[in-house]
Image (cartoon, rainbow, N blue to C red; front, side):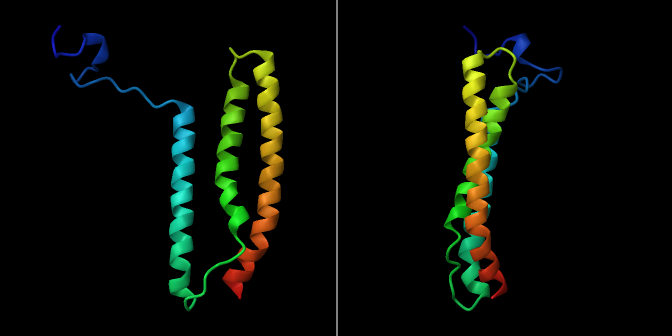
Length: 118
């Protein structure tokens, strides 16, 4: 067995062939990026507002996770080779995610606006 990759695993330039990440992995990565941006913004807020912390915005931190779960449910729902029971459960999960997203935004946006304006 040699250390050289197979010809089918290489592109024209001789390097390894590109294989993109699975869509679910990409969705989870974007959710992580959004969480990091939110955490950086939350930690920088006291520097620009006289040391006061932003309070009452905890429901907004559920939104990226809920939106990511909604995206995964919709992606799974659109797959052609899944069973009807999985499609039904993904549809129910998508509806629950939409309701959770609306509730989280309704609870989190007023304190955010109060903190940013006031």
